[in-house]
Image (cartoon, rainbow, N blue to C red; front, side, top):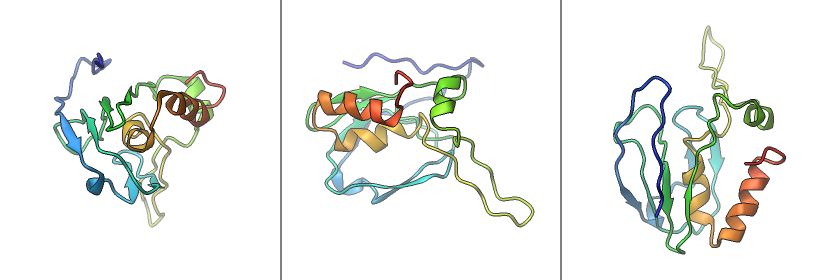
Length: 140
């Protein structure tokens, strides 16, 4: 069981949907909706469930899910208000193209974590070690 709320400091909540993502629907290259960062993904993703936003356009925000190996996770690192996380990845801010300058993709954010990690993690031990590797020294 995953118990998680969709938090919002402004009191605005986005509806979620439950989806099952089969291996063949995982992209070879993941592109973040919010930061536009692109991440080449390893092969052999597993089937997984997720709870992304039901309304498209403001990010994926998968919230949590379970993969076919029985590993479940949620991803909440409150990237916009945690200076420790910003210190680990200071490039989280996407800069759109302007005045003939190309866009500058941001970094990996909370919206991306479930889709980047869950299809490839086979055990809880690997999941915990991967999380520490993603955010070393931050406690995440």
